[in-house]
Length: 234
Image (tube, rainbow, N blue to C red; front, side, top):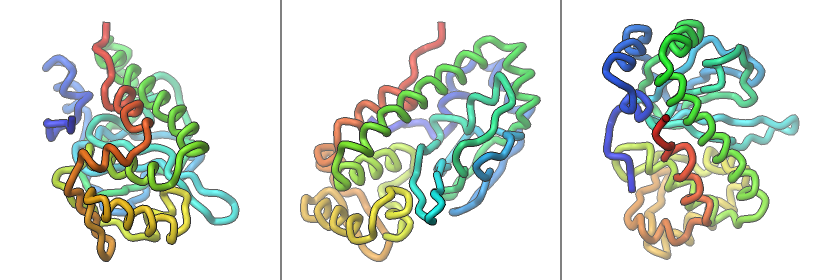
């Protein structure tokens, strides 16, 4: 099931008092495609509760190749581990799809989490779910075909965006998936023949989500049970 809310899911889970405390400490921030939030190795100074759009963690190799390591949409927050201790980013954080966030200074959020147990627990549970998704992705990237991973990736984007159309070039898709352009093109053509999507000039439209789910590997449903579907805090 696709998320129905247009707000940040973590903030939606909080009491009104805790949510208002976060809102009073935050500022709205709009970002565009390719916006650089942090470079790999940067010390985290701000965190972003995503309201719309997608932020991707991207790993860069010395030979110039890139691959997406995770994505954060309105289900979560960037670098959730920073609520407890100072951390550095392992991946470059960049805007994958334009959107808006609530930006909070990490020191202010850390102080709020020290004062408010529910806020701390909700973010910690999300961090655990994200870790589970990262572990599943490691197995997925090693064992599953590119067309299955492409279908899974489209579904994950679809869950986080409004509407059924994504604007993505072959070059951009290939870099995020760690694949060749020809591989992405073949995968897209296969999904189009199956009636799951239409694809032309960097425009992907999902026309049959059920067919797309059939084409994806098992890791899609496993991923939903992690960062997109965290348990209620005790």
